[in-house]
Image 1 (cartoon, rainbow, N blue to C red):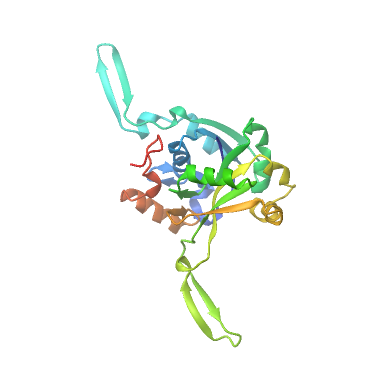
Image 2: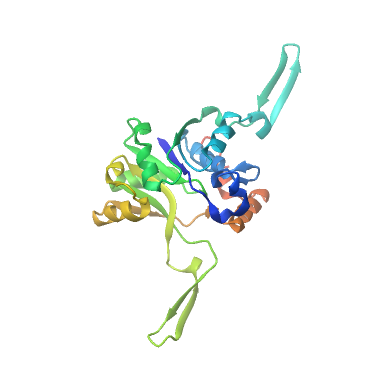
Amino acid sequence: MKVVIFCGGYGVRMGEETRSIPKPMIEIGGRPILWHIMRYYAAWGHNDFILCLGYKGDVVKRYFLSYDGAMLNDFVLDRGSNGTKVELLSKDLEEWRITFVDTGLNATIGERLKAIGPHLGDDDVFLATYGDGLTDAPLPDLVDAFRESGKTAQFLSVRPNFNAHLVSTDLEGNVTAVEDMSRSDLRINGGFFVFRREILDRIEPGDELVEETFARLIADRELVAYPYEGFFGVMDTIKDRQRLDTMHESGQAPWQHLSLDGIPV
């Protein structure tokens, strides 16, 4: 199943770093968050990626064109009589097929998705996500739930993980409740999607996918949400990046606890 990743935005809230690289190339634990996202899908057997490029897309291309597995993985160096051999102890990109598509500098997400239509081949169902979010959600369960629904689109529904409080008041302005947003019933779009191919026919010029296109799907009862209570983290700000980096360094990064054959470790 193909995986579409939106990598073309500016990422202005990430500060100075995105002046030279696009947000999906900002590193978590020494590797771009884009790599971590791709590895998540690869862990469940989905190795065919379509990258929707835009802002500084050349940086993404150069990273993968010059990727050196020995520099980023453990390996054994054997300088035997038959010459020098390098045996990688862990592998990642060997099975990955990556299609790089320039979808425009200022294109909306809907326009980027529409642009990669010819690269979907004959796939009726495909996966998609943004280039700045991580999760450990069980991908096969998402796909199964989507197929059973018979709908056009599905997204992961998660609880917000940023610090804020919901305030309730009466008609006179008296506060009746202050509730931590993460403990409320409020849920947000986690940005991990499963789509049927016909969603491309629902996208009109200038559409923001989650706003205009999804509004049409909602009206036709063609959009479903998959609720998930496990880990979800988005790298929207410098503080978010620091949090994810700390989780990685501590060995407590939930998105990493999958082997490359999809078996939890």
